Image (tube, rainbow, N blue to C red):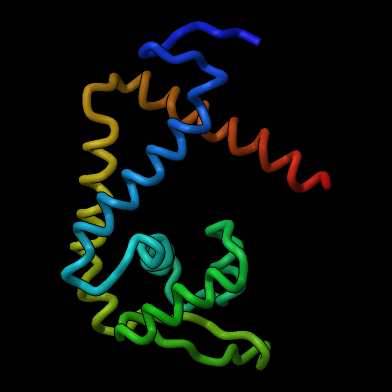
Length: 153
């Protein structure tokens, strides 16, 4: 294994810890900015996805975010309790639900989108366009590498 030092740490020692650290900081950033709306970082991706696909089936929503049904149900319940979404029985499958944004959910779209844009700008500040493309490419490859081993079980 290659052990080139980066920032005083070796690759094998730091990659998982660094990704975990980045994940925590992203959640803290989002939580601080969404606190006034009563929305947490756990609900943030659900709103972002609903802004692109309002009325999506709850199970499809969970799959698209790569979360289990229980995690999805909790996030949707919190958003529903706060008045941002409503659940309706799926007309084509009475066992399933579709998730719709309420007027309140639609009203915070500019703020939510702005937080997402700001986070991206802050996280990627100081990187060239090529470096940004490379970061995305490498992270996507790491996700595929790990996902393929999980799916193969």
